[in-house]
Image (cartoon, rainbow, N blue to C red; front, side, top):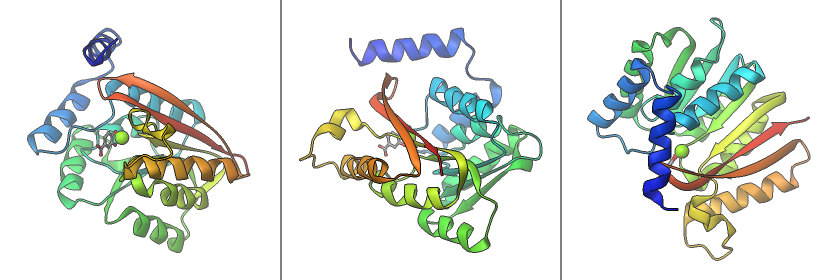
Amino acid sequence: MDQQRFSEVDDYLTETLRLEDDHLRHAAQQAQAAGLPPIAVTPAQGKLLQLIAQIHGARRILELGVLGGYSTIFLARALPPDGLLISLELQESYAQTARASIAAAGLSDRVEVRVGPALEGMQALQAEGVEPFDLTFIDADKPATPEYFEHALALSRPGALIIADNVVRRGELADPDTADAGAQGMRRFHELLAAEPRVSATTIQTVGAKGYDGFTLALVTG
Ligand code: DHB
Ligand code: MG
């Protein structure tokens, strides 16, 4: 088993299950044309996010890291017409690319992209006293994932889901001496999860076009 095979299977699934439509392909093309890093979720992962949000009946979604809006489009498609997705993005230029693709997908009425550091954005949401979120997707700078999780918890209603991307980091998660700051952050994140009585969580390892990684699914129980 190698990376080529993992990518072939992702290509097979994308084609056979028709995981992308023209709007998603457009968003991916625009992100590439704008020179954004090629780190968006795969079509299969994006569809999983959409399905989880649909199963959950999410009406309010928070996303950290909009990038080109690719995962945003999947998640926003799970929302009812009066639903809301707020996505926080550090890079103004990424936000502009994302907003255009989200608009082209007909989802501007339920998506708001806010520019700035995610922690500040989350603090602002808390200060605004926004309605709590039903689902948070953490997919921003990896070392700060533990802090993002703590704020996501504060912004969640009981029964909400918190999903974090890129938590396995090619297996570095299991190395206590890892030099990878992202993996160190993910180890702290898992320690927080273990110590937090208000969540019930698991992590699933994944392979695919983006290599060997994984995601965490956490249910806010209280
Ligand atoms: C990186 C970030 C991601 O969100 C991802 O899914 C893969 C890689 C990165 O920063 O390298
Ligand atoms: Mg990611």
